[in-house]
Image (cartoon, rainbow, N blue to C red; front, side, top):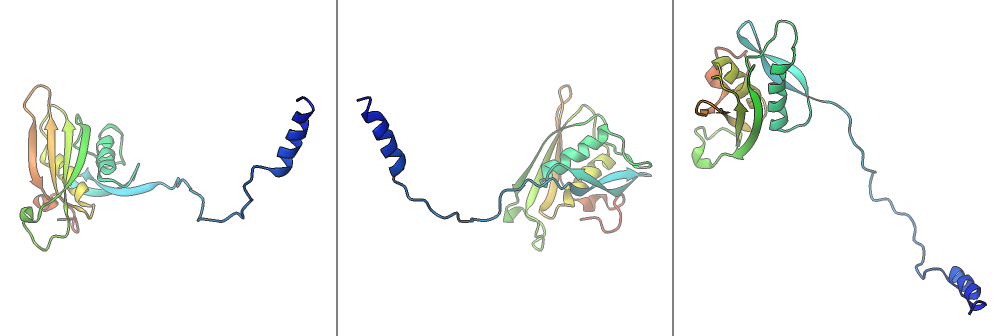
Amino acid sequence: MRRALPLLTCLALLTGCGISPTAVSSLGSPPVISTEPIFSQVYLIKKGRLVQQRVRVPGKTAEDLMRTLMDLANHPVESGQDTDLYGMRYQDAEAEPVGRQQRLDPSETRSLVLYVTLQGERELSRVALAQIVCTARLRTDISKVQVNIARTVAPSTTSGRRTCKEFHDLAPAGAPS
């Protein structure tokens, strides 16, 4: 048995596993992680009116955009620009399709309502609401925005579905409707 073992080992090495080798074939480029930053626009406040500001966002979703806007309330922004979202914390943003029967304007091609939920005890000012609604409406797929405020002490509130058109007196020329 001891003599047969080396002989069997040599035989196994010479015959291989029985699978014939194949050529290497390319099936596309290798996976690459992109580290290029993503930028988007948000609305901040300057002298009581909305102004667009280019900011870096972590991703391309509406949730990423809303989270970035709310984070600006806790970080300093460019000189002369501000936010009226202080004291509010971002909780969630969820987009849902708008049904045909719910569209008020049949020529409207945007098809999502964005529901933004914030936590905080204060009422949102009109300017703060305009910041959220007009920033969300910069996305081509958002038709309306509803802001819900979750409170621990007072009853929760909702803004109803809004468009940037309602804040025309605060928004710059060319702002989304």
